[in-house]
Length: 272
Length: 364
Image 1 (cartoon, rainbow over the protein chains, first blue to last red):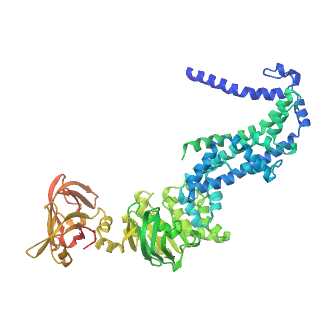
Image 2 (tube, rainbow over the protein chains, first blue to last red; image 1 turned 135 degrees about the vertical axis):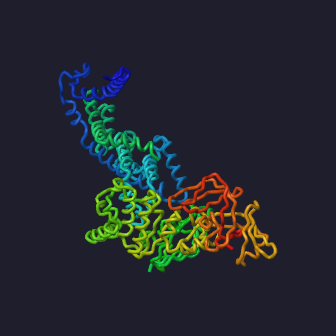
Image 3 (cartoon, one colour; image 1 turned 120 degrees about the vertical axis):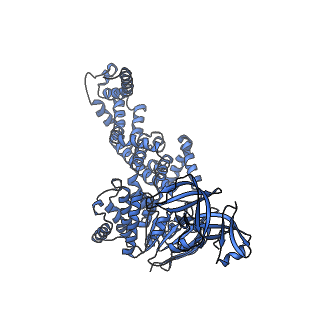
């Protein structure tokens, strides 16, 4: 028999969870409801339809943008894992002059709002002739301070002797990182991977600045322009269908990795 | 040939000297133990041989070849670490095979080598296990296996038994000694445990504050320590030290302690003549202090001590006493019946006394 205070707590937490879930549920149901009935939708739709999705697909190149987003988010994530770990390893394990200063500079960049560097970065993209190419979305995102910080902390918690043993066995630095240390820091890699993938996938502002050609747009950018740019012709169902399309991949990815994600966030926070 | 030669090697961390102008030659096939207290620089010396620590100045030769700038993998050495440093994600077999794979050896030869090493160390049943599924002793065997599988010219052991319990430590000590007999390879072994040092080493280098104090055979170190530090470091319980002066009365030399509680007549020690009137330290090992003065005609000096504690080890006992505030330990027969606290007269063998310069600590 559950104690009364536990029952109350259970009801409260269930209520809170539902209040978070309900908007998503409503969004999905509304996107499957004929436009005229959306206003009356409470909990269950009277009639289900995929018209909103068909209309959305016919109006915007959503598949192309899905491919673009997948390429951009995947390559950015791969880059951050490779280059972020290399930087973190150097900052944690290789002695060189100015190592700590460099680390503090990297941490300092985390405090700068993205908006401050927006214009200089855009000018760089123009100079490099990367505007309206995926390079503008991928290359600047190949490393970031947060990933470096997480990797540095993870490498610091690994005993030096493991690295020394690998060196005596004949490993170079890259083999030490990727063959010896990587298998022993999977939680950190998964955390960095998920955070990078999600932030890259959800980014709208930077793509809006550097991509104008519809065929290179990422899905959030395309959906945002579609939903607020007038092309949805004020049809709520179509807008919501595009929003569902946008959220679905990240929800699927999160549900697959969520166990690792929660585990690694906890361990990254508590261990050295 | 895989002798090792340190030629005036120094290592500085910033302005702090970890190793000061060390010169040392280790012969081919020798088992040399580097021993000293924590932070004395012994591990730094070992890691220099491995190439894991850069030296600030001096030259290091392995097998006659200058290796100052040679990376660890090209030195043909293997090292066993205190915390094993096994690759956690690999099985014992893969841990042993990894270094060979990197060197491009074919699978069949790798298998032969790994199985041979596993047989020598009796770890064949462990080959499929990962380190987390092994005990400390098993991990240490695998770590040693990883070292021997490569047939290196030099084995380096960095306090390999420190993490094991006392029983296992004794067992592994024997195994390492047997391994050396079998492999006939140069071994440099770092430890802070003087029992390990005494039992394993052909020679022992005693290090303190980055300097080698003495390099000699275990017996010579024990019997003829060059200075007070070595005398105090080798031996357990350590040598007793009594501060005092050399006095001369009517042509006879004697040692007088500071509190005037102990006096020992000195004969047949001409080296002490110039020290008359000067401060010296007398050293006497616990086994050279007895409860009765009847040991084969040797000469004794009486010590009137207060016994504080007796440790009974079964086959022998240690009495811990004070002589006017100075601590004195004596090794006694197990049969001696002493009930502390009590006062007692002990007898120190005159012939076994060591004398050290009161200022420099050098043996006289």
